[in-house]
Every structure is written in structure tokens, then in C-alpha cells.
Length: 110
Length: 111
Image 1: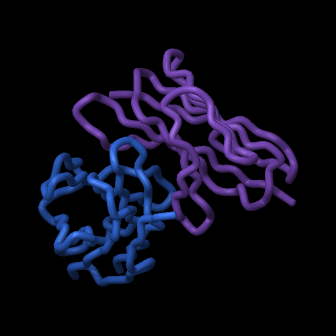
Image 2: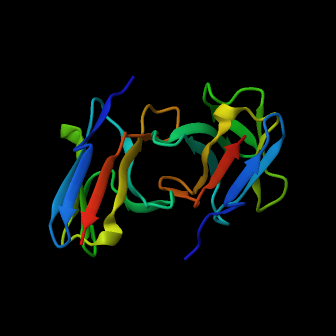
């Protein structure tokens, strides 16, 4: 099956710092999304980014499908950015279930 | 902005009891899903539902699980006889075609 790796697994930032989270996958994927799981466990949609670049406020994401990776940029981090960030995607043409990565645990300190 | 809702937010049940987790997907969406996340682990697919039938299910989705769309708005997951290992966060998601939107989850605790 497909391998997905998110890096780094853990990250501690001071408030105001920038960071880049990475999602690598071993084969072609479809419909890649990024999610933020907040400390209450809720999954928040961040980006639907099968290819190209999108920006939403302090967050932006880039997927280079041909090179099998996606990046999530967080600028000027805030304590409310803390939580786990997951990439997820569909794999294989006959299914539309999402396969989730193992996540990056981010802690932003004041 | 339309959103997926789930009830209850937290359910505690005893082993062997039946539970029904409820979801209201976004109204014009066509595809519906249940996922679960055991504490500290990644999110796993359980089942997808389209056109009033299951379109795909994972190995986790055994005979103890069932899904139903009893009316035009609700989508339910039933666990017939809960086990300790069913304790997890259960997420409902819906999709019109490409992007899946997730509900806030139901935290199920089986004691």
C-alpha cells in the first residue's frame, strides 16, 4: 500500500515564529487535504489542495503532485495554532476514502 | 457556512450496550463517511455511503457496525454490542464530489 510520512512528528514554536510542515507520499494521490485537529479533538478543514498553492490568512499550502509532497506553511504562529496537523488524500481510482498521515503535533508557546 | 453536525459530543456506555451516533451532513452533499480515531492514533476510515447504500467499508467495520440514512438529513452509525476497544472519537464526513467536510466528532467511552 501507499506510504505517507509527515514531518516533523513534533514541533515546538515560540509565538510569532514561522514553520513548514511536510507530507510525503510514495505514489500518486488524489484530492489531498490538510486538517487541523484542535486540543478538543475537532478536525478543522484547512485546505483542499490537490495541486498548486492556496493561501488563507496566515496559512498557505502547496502540493507538488509530480514530486509526491505537500507543504503547509504557518506564519506568525499563535497559541491557537497548537494541535495536530494531518494531511489526508484519496488513493486508488475505485475509492474515495481518505487516508490520513500520522500527523505533526505542534505546540506554540506564548 | 454549512457544516456537518454530530450528536452527542460525548457518550459513555457500558460494554455490551448498543450505541447510535448521529450526524447531519451538509444538505446538498451526496457522499457520507464515518471515520474513527483511537486516542493518540491517526484517523481511520470505517465506511462510505452513497445512493442509500454502503459503497466501501474497512476491515474494522464488522457485523457489529451498521449505518443508516433514515431520512433526508440524518446519517447514523450503530454499534450493536460495544467493546472496550470501540472507545474512540468517531467522525462523520460528507462530500459533494471532492473535498470532505468533517463534523466535530463524538467521543465514545466504553466502560
